[in-house]
Length: 527
Image (cartoon, rainbow, N blue to C red; front, side, top):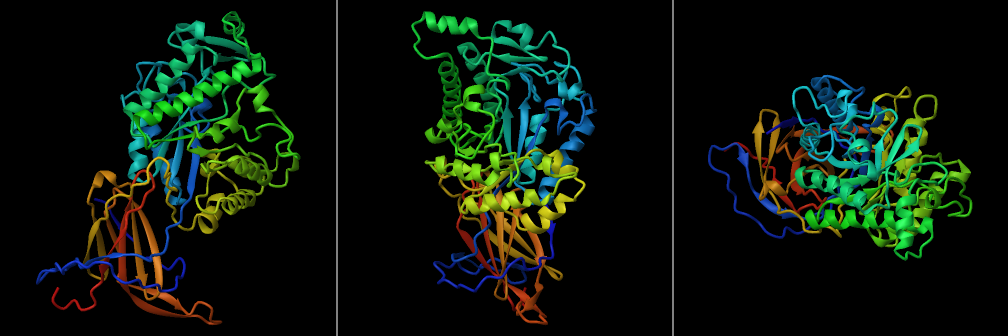
């Protein structure tokens, strides 16, 4: 049990909307007790904000974590804590961690070697045998942060990934690998053996780890001129009577793999989210003003198809351009993708936050978030590329985010097509401790709790507090200073007692339980 001690100030004002109490429980307070457990079911409460607020943590080339290969395990863990604590301080709620940067692993695997980016030598694990992925998951969940495992399904070796080791797939399974130049090696996406192999690697993580989602970025075929050394599988396809042209054949292979992943993940863990972050332009000319790289013909990614077939649960097109960059405008592309989202999956754009820190204007980041909120009013969200942009920025972007954009905590939007069943309503109690009140949740099923929500009413003003499941006690002031009325030229401050507490819980799928009201007793002489 972790106790959070807060002195809460009003974040916003709500009109008082008292609804008839639906059912009442007996007063369980005992003579001499300092606890209050008079509870009823409560409706008509203020809504908690919903928004997916995430950052990518790239391990390839040590972009975000670890900061360099070969760091002592203790320092690696300290960097994990620093990243997650930064997310908590910013009221963010998810992290997208790259777990397979180049057919290697940041976790112990029987299928692939330890990553070069951890130890500086592929195949060599952490010095004290800790499991980095488990550590990430445990520490994220302790803080109420979702962790999505980010896989590169086809990259076999990166030029900054150290020498090709004897354990690298480049040497152990050369028939599946192609040298694409510049130090890059790639698995052949049209090979059925490759598809089964990458699927097995991914499902090994889904099976063994308590992750919240599976994630792909834009690397299907490598960036370049669209050529790829797959003459052998192309000839085999033609010899078998295949009738597609070569580009359609490559796209069909990628389509098949995306659909396979979605089906396999849902068959094993139906609640688990699957998200993809494709290149932000489907094809130039869509919409008419858009110009740029053609992923459809160069990466063989028919990204719009995956969205419209519902093979994903959240869609994060990489809209890495500014609002006013006409040929690749952030809002123009976001609106186009919104129009393609016929099944109403979550549309959470990716933003190049690092590009707009340093010498650039960080207000670009704030404006893009506000545009995303305006387009997706019910279940907005976005992902920052990358975490380094939130850890190190000259313009103090974090202060702007915390004060203006992330001032209030937000829950991850629910995904009702996967799970719409809310968790059981908790019970609760209040204990007086000096000048404070200790509010405690009593879970009906602790295994179905990921977040806790407390709504506190001082006079007519509601305050909302969101905690991770690891914290089942909230300590607050018995009274709070409130500006009355807020629109006066010279507002007055008056002290109001806490009058109502409503407690609820939220599950891993974002479903919130009904709330239980705990009466705050004013006459405490017998307590």
